[in-house]
Length: 84
Image (cartoon, rainbow, N blue to C red; front, side, top):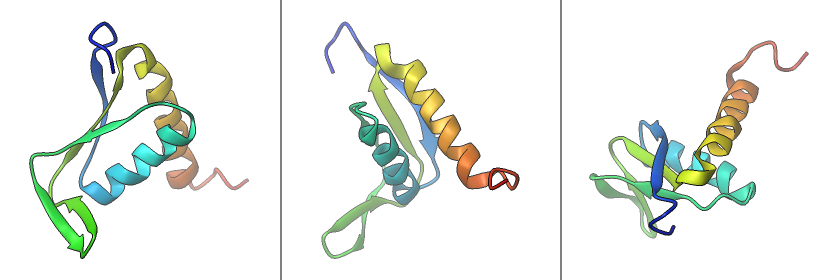
């Protein structure tokens, strides 16, 4: 991320596992992502995660697109009518 783009928080997740899933959805769409947390820990050997909330940051110019992608992902996974 460059200074002129400035990182923008587009979402928060309750833990690092969910944050990683959100980050993967954005990265698969070509959006660079940074996951930030104050509480780092180890899920199991070799896999670092966060025990507390994490922030999902993207370049400011891509924030609107990132929010739209996350909203669509959430709708697909949590909307009971999405399968129709």
